[in-house]
Structures are given as C-alpha cells and as structure tokens.
Image 1 (cartoon, one colour):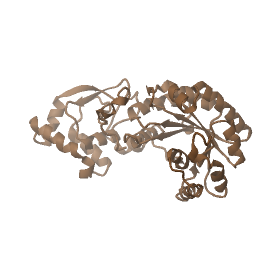
Image 2: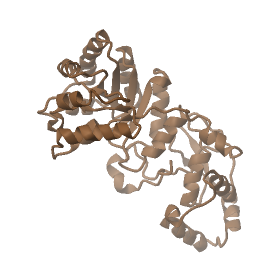
Image 3: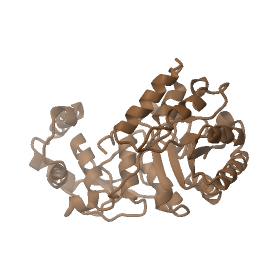
Image 4: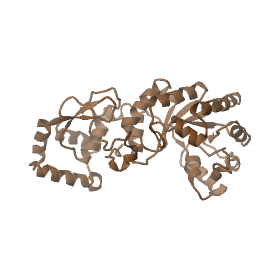
Length: 362
C-alpha cells in the first residue's frame, strides 16, 4: 500500500494507460484540507513515525522548492495550500480532485492514499475522522492465498530445475503454511521445456498432506494427462487482449474459450474443480490499455462454463489503483466476489497498492 509512488516519464511506452505521475495524494475531496491535518491523520494511521529512508530525497527537494517560494515554515505552508487550489485530473476515470498547487511531501502522498481514499471510482466522499474504519472496514477477515511459484515462477527460468528440487520447493511451501500450491503445468514440452516433468512432479507430491495442488491444463490432452497423474484440481487460462491471445495461445479469445469449454465439461464430468485465469486485465504488451469490458466478456464466459474461481492477472505489472479499481468494479457486476481472485506483478512497484484496493473492494 505504500508503493503508490510517482511513475516518471521512463514508462513512455505505456503512456497511453499508465499515468506518467500517479499522485496518490489526489483522492476526491470537496474542501481544502490543511497540510497539518493531512500529515496528522496519516501519521496516526502508521503510528506517527517516519524514517529518513521512507521519506526519501523528494522531501528535501520539495522543502527547498517551498523555501524558494517564500514558505519558510509549516504554518506558512498551510496558508499557501489553503489559499491556492487548482483542479487536477484524478487517476480515477471521470474524477476531478481539488488539490493544492503545491505538491505534498512523499509521506503525505502515502498517508492520504491510505487513509482518505474510499476506493470506488464513483465515490467523492472522504473523511479523516475515522482512519481505522476507512482503512480496515471493508477488508475481508479471511484471504485465500494460492501460491503459483512452482509453475508461474519456474516456467520462465532458462536453466532446467531438477525434478527433485521442484518437489522439495513444493513441500517447503506447504510446510510454511500455504494450503494451495499450483504445482506445475501440463503443456507441451516443446513450448515450456522447464515443465516437461509435470507428470513426475505431480506424482511425487501425492502423499503430501495439508494442501491442494491444482495444475494448469491448456487443452483436453493436457487435462487427460493431468488426471492420469493424479490431479484433483485444474486451471485454464485465457486473455483479455486479442493480440496477447494470438501471440501466447496461437488463437483468438473466442477460440480459446471454446477450447476451454471442452476442458471444463470434462472436468465437470470428473467432479474436478476448474480455476480460470485471465491475463492482461489492465494492460497488454502489444495493444496497450485493455478495456474493462474485454475483461468482463472473458470473465462471464469462464463463469458460465463452470469455473469455481476466476483469477484476474496484471500480466505485465502496469496496473495502478486508477486502472485496477474500474476493472474490478466492472467484473464484480457479473462475477460474485467470492469467486474472484487477483494476481499482480510488481514490475513498477504497484502490486501492494493494487492488492490493497482489491481487498477494500472485498
């Protein structure tokens, strides 16, 4: 949640859908709030202590800017900020936010983001009177964690990991308390050589107790092989981007869904739960921004074919709360919240922020 920092112009490739500067300090509020109030409410939320490392270099730079403009103390800063306000575009679609013409220090960025924002793209109401309720009130008391490292993590490693090492990794993950570990993928060894030992890995962990071990099955052939090796739960994956579907699955979104419909039917006949993945839910390396309506289309199809859970993945890690919230709100219109999961990559330091807003949307 404290990862909501400025994204600079280095991300020019994603400029169409990643804000060059994501101001976490721009929740929609209807009145000027003094810098002292902002900082106090935020500080209280984290116990009121800030390290030099946390504050970063920008504080010193901004303090120098304030000094150059005649702001010599914090009290003067309050006056400046209350007297001069401008309208800036908010990261949330369709929102405008009143903000000072002076940037807040980084610590205030983070605190405002955490304590003031009611994470809904339709909401403009804010309150600083009950930080704890606003921050924790909507977060679920229970969260299911699905560890996908043995599959999603290892599949891109060029050096082949020995089967015994993979099995030991899975066992250690289970011993750490994880109750669901995606063990491997039954894909063609031609496309993913790292997972050519899927059958051996799955058979080797059949005796491990205290966890479930779903496996990825991209087609009926993979599903049959997984079941023969002892799979009790499987997963399928589609994309919300047509270009990514063509490059990664070598077929259109519609064709991939038809393919997975057959897998889902076979799984249902065998009483095997199916988990559905959707990749590129906010951004695609080929197309750029992905519309929430595209994610909704795929999610509805996966739900209709019987997926017990649908995981929304920010495949290339370009999502921010400003893009994740509208996408989630759209999907929640068609998929029950208890069937939704999220999967964020921390490519640009936004994963924790995205997880936080997802939790606050339940």
